[in-house]
Length: 438
Image (tube, rainbow, N blue to C red):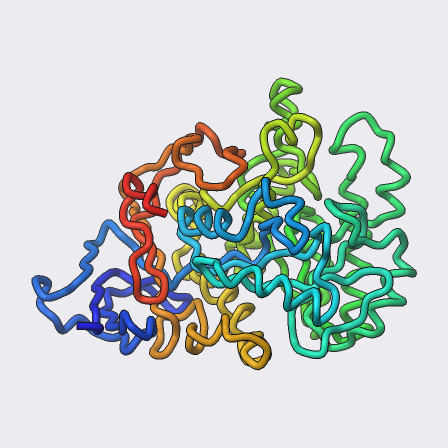
């Protein structure tokens, strides 16, 4: 029988309640969501009150590293990044464009999309914005690097960025907020925290918000880390400026003070852009998350090897630990399940879903997902993330799937764990001790 059933305590932004979900394992779409009517003995998948089911979680900011050059496939490719994503409870991801051959026009973008055809989970590709680029002929998300990052797709001055963005009016543009001139002024400072000071992020925030307003962009601020910058975002929203923001697990969990207390060889492993900030910044981000002022929990997954990290490469992995980290937010930090649904399923789903119609006109790869991801509603993808609230999870090298084989959370014990992942009506992960099936 293609129709399958799940009974579980389900979490959405509207509330938490036990529901019965019927889905078609052939089409991969949800048929109905409602009160529990089937006897427990007739249910295909039953989860008691120790478990919480969400619509499939999504990460809208990762670096899979594969492109048509193949140069960085040793770091991560679309197959390995999907294995890491499923291992962390994620059913869709969005990949950034700072590749050796960046997707910056129709041809290069669709070439990268074709590479993702073998992906286990759907991957939405960002297009890059650089000094000479122009918008694609169809709707896609864009990324603008305001200062130097991994790759060559960035701007050396704010004037250059503004001159290009005038061509992207009304587009979806995500910003890496670090002011290039401040970074240049501090490039010879003694450590990474000082070379990329918080002032660079604060100034870039103000400029990004001004550009979003001026060109009527649908803006997003990536991996936001500056607690004092949240007031500028709040003020922009009150003015009606369309801006959302991400926060990473590492910016919530770690602090500059904690990293500075480590040995130098350990400190360098936590290097990322923008850097991990202070206790005060972390607290302000957590408070904003609690108040539903943060829109996405996004990892900025950067699969550099321990050797590359030891040599000073910036970026941290995060896919494998996503769901386990969510249990820390739920149990230790008392973040509501409704808020978790908002930042991990529904908002990432909205981001993914809004490009489906445009992409479906260019490729067959996105047509199987129905109305899309992130919602426990009929005709949406039957993709679910089930977490265990009672069984803890300790992060070790043995339970990591990324090619990097490293995590900033190594040795950390989270209070809960990932129990199961369903993707398009198929169970892909069933209990942590079975994760090597991925």
